[in-house]
Length: 283
Image (cartoon, rainbow, N blue to C red; front, side, top):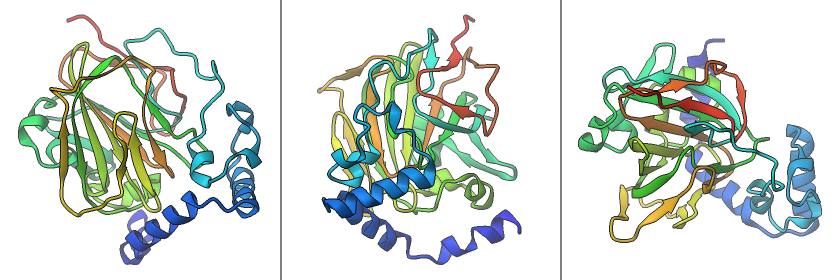
């Protein structure tokens, strides 16, 4: 079966309604019912609870609190690298931005302007730059951390679709990551601006950042933006910056200039928070 045919049912599913229902279930404090749901999920997806700060399944009053669980101190040591991997998951794609085009999968590209919600001036800063797209599966740790030091400048909530973001869908839905709902965070880093975008998906109940809390819902259907020039938010490399309530994908954009990705990286490779992602080589 072709990838396009495999994703056809997603065009027909009531994705918004399913997401709303999943969000309500995930936030419910159902006592024994919640514990059974979590226990089933852990077994179904092979979640390693030994890494959790609290490995007791019954200790989580809601599925969301389990899903966004903290790790034990020291579970993810940080590499000595200019840019570290911000999540646990798998590599979808990474590499050069060709003028303003980001590679999604064979036969599919999308523009930086589409990714950031249509702001051509912001997108222009990443012409011929670098990108990385990282996929978080259901079993993964779902907090997102900083790849390097950064000062927050803007946060943009871009409304959109809620397709799945698994590899099959990435191959079958054109412009997937620029079609789905997303929270685009714009930072100033050690070598200039960078973008860290949290991309939503089917049944992703919400996305949250440490400085704002839950960004969605509400889902107003219109683009919303916050600026932080007069209210500085500064985060260090490795600091938590946000989380998914049910899993999805992170897309990062970096400007043109010397940047060399970890030579061990390749698409579909499993990755862990804190490992070396890239070096910012001298010109």
